[in-house]
Image (cartoon, rainbow, N blue to C red; front, side, top):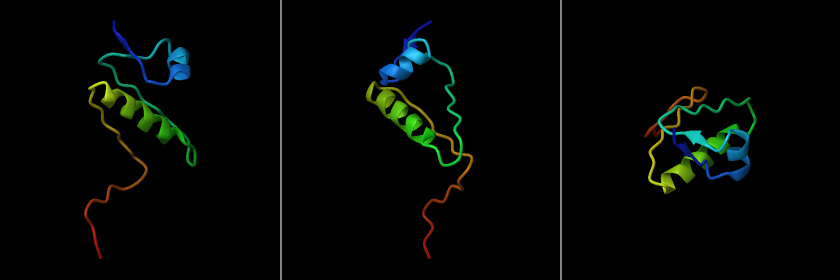
Length: 68
């Protein structure tokens, strides 16, 4: 089992060293919190290491390329 760093030392310590490779890591947060920023930061750190990730937002509608 390989553990990948989130790039955030305190979080890595809390979750046992990082994220287990080839798993799904879910961050659930409350409305008006900054939980989304944690996910963005982890993904950015992992992309810098050559990884791929997906962010799924089930709260806000996806609006792409709409103009009045």
